[in-house]
Length: 239
Image 1: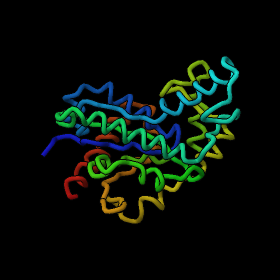
Image 2 (image 1 turned 90 degrees about the vertical axis):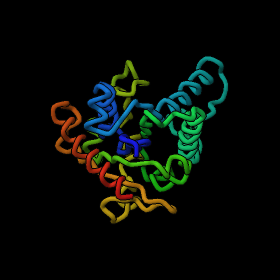
Image 3 (image 1 turned 45 degrees about the vertical axis):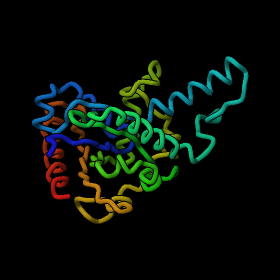
């Protein structure tokens, strides 16, 4: 049996602490990371760079080429609801491409990150578009913060000079409210404390409650992640 998670799906509202968790893990030496968190060499698949590319392309089309926008309207909303699911299909495609290396998973943990609000289909819709290769190996870490905390941290982290930055991007208040105030996590995960029953699969999960905030302090975050990942590891081994 491998000594590391093959696929870890990191979920939560925007600014819940997902990016800080990833940044912390990336800065932790691999031997320590493997021992404490069961995470080996990290490969990230995040849908934010994908959707940001759409916005940049639309800005080029509109402002430079004087052509119609393709993916979003002038207020920065997707033209079609199905584009949220297209991003998940892109995640699945990126993972399939990695699997062309026959030894890909031997020493790697693939970390998949995204957020979904009820307004654009929620986690229920998103998971229907994750591939079987992902679902059958996935474990989930959900970082739980209320909407008000997501709003506070979204305001705090936003750097208008780096809107494409993983750690410093943000949403206007009105957009965050429309897209992420309501989430379907509680309904999606169901009542079982350890497994999400989805399709024909049991997906191990744990919830990290980030109030009071721990992701802003490495001294607090390390032990918290160790507890969360140890619990998740034990749940996975019962699968």
